[in-house]
Image (tube, rainbow, N blue to C red; front, side, top):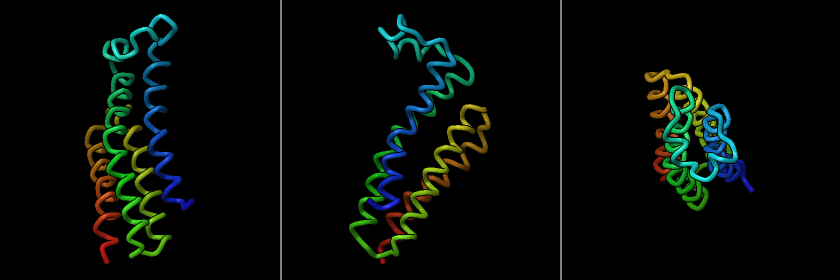
Length: 128
């Protein structure tokens, strides 16, 4: 397994850290587990933003996974380049979540664009 593939696994798991923050900082318990989506819709403030960070993370993970797989299959860039871009993407997603939870909207948008740039770099940067 390459480091880039491990980054895909981390990106798949990362949204659960955000939802964990949203749920367990928001008073999630056994009763709320009957309708967790309804519970998440009642949250406010940083817990609501953590839920939104989770949703966005689920949305961006498939394109990232596809980009890593395509970059690996194309083999037109050195492996350390692909690995570096994948690590940069994962770090950007962690920082994105922090910015979202902290309500740093402008910083969050910049970090989001950086992460999307990583996905584009995996596609375009490996085209040879």
